[in-house]
Length: 116
Length: 115
Image (cartoon, rainbow over all chains, first blue to last red; front, side, top):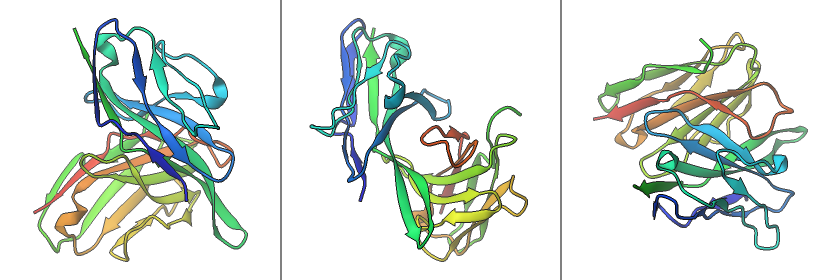
């Protein structure tokens, strides 16, 4: 079964300090991983996906299949980065014979607090 | 509207009552998902619709939970004989189709409180 683990419930860093939000996954197939973010009083939204190899708002994440990790990093934290961050794994689930669907499994989330 | 719309935003009910939560997805999105988010947890999958049919309802916790999407657009999540443990934020999300993996567009959620 697929699983996503975010070991830190809360991460506090000072403005300008580097940030690393940890994510580990368990999945027998070829994983597709994502980071979602939820700012205060806003809806959950996609931040970035590993297949795009993009940097969004200064954040990057590298898929490490050997360590089954997909940590989110930013070299210099900004106050506006304070939010809940969720790591998510997309996997194909076979439910019935000939049927299935992609399912997005989320971690429990890490609350990032950037101290001014 | 441009985004996924969910109503009501807040619902307080008594144990044993029936509740309906509505989701209006982004126009043209054929895939629709319901998730439940309890306090301190990440969103947990409940059910997935592709068009009008429930392609995957494996996340529904028991037979008190049911969801429909009769015309392939708006969906309603129905909870019978509510229990205090059903208290959570119920999130709806949509995406363009089956080929799309991972990018879901979420609504703001319906916060259900069962007293």
